[in-house]
Amino acid sequence: MPKWLRWSVVVVLLLGCTYYWLLIESHVPGDGQYSIDMATVRRLADSIPGNKARAIHVEQIAVFEFQGIGIMAGDSWAKRKVPVYSYQLNFPDHTAIIDTAMDANLAKQMGVAEFDAGAYARMSRALETSTLVLITHEHPDHIGGLTTQPELSKLMKAVRLTRTQTEHADKMLPAVFPAGALTGYSPLNDEPYQAVEPGVVLIRAPGHTPGSQMIFVQTADGQEFLFLGDVAWQMQNIDRVRERARLVTVFFLKEDRGQVLWELAALHALHEAEPKLHMIPGHDGTAIADLIETRALHPGFE
Image (tube, rainbow, N blue to C red; front, side, top):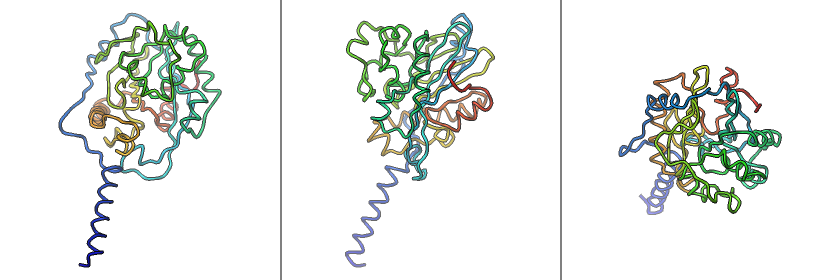
């Protein structure tokens, strides 16, 4: 074999292995585990007296566009929509918010393809009267809408950030809390599970970010929802137990990739065991549309 041909083969093999490692490989590591104790979650959901939420509303505030291979390793290079949501839990006498998306300025900095100013305005108005604000994790498309509120000091009494979330301001960039916004603030301790409202339980799930958590909601009519944050961007990550491409997770998101894969495996098993549990990935337009169609979720904040 000519020398030039041998070197060509070596280069092709190196490029192929690199492509596979960065963009396709997504095996669950065998040296760890993650599990969700649903018996404990449901017990805690009933541990705080009072009425549970009667309905859950959703606002789509922005849309990114990413290649499919960035959303799930090994997928195509075709562009896909990645919506950004905020959720409102409607109790009989108050409301709660899960995730706050981001304002127009942050959206522009992050390169969104679409931004709905009306939806963002409705979310901001809802924040003013909500008695509980929860954030799935520190990234700006989930916490940014909170950090830019003009009356933030008045809102903070309703905000329940965990200690880890407050300690990782670097994960929020380009979102930034105003100077002094967290002075004297008492965050929640980081617990594996903790109830914060009737029917609402936080489930610690670090990996995507240090302060990442899932939020379980059991409504008054007995329906159950699990807000996944960005443990999974879309249901296909759970169905196929495949992470985002390593190029995205390691070099851009700086995730604990193994931890996220263990969480995806646990969610896959849970989804098979409990198909009636509504799983809500961080950015899945199809999943949200299906839940709206069945009236499990309701479009637009009240």
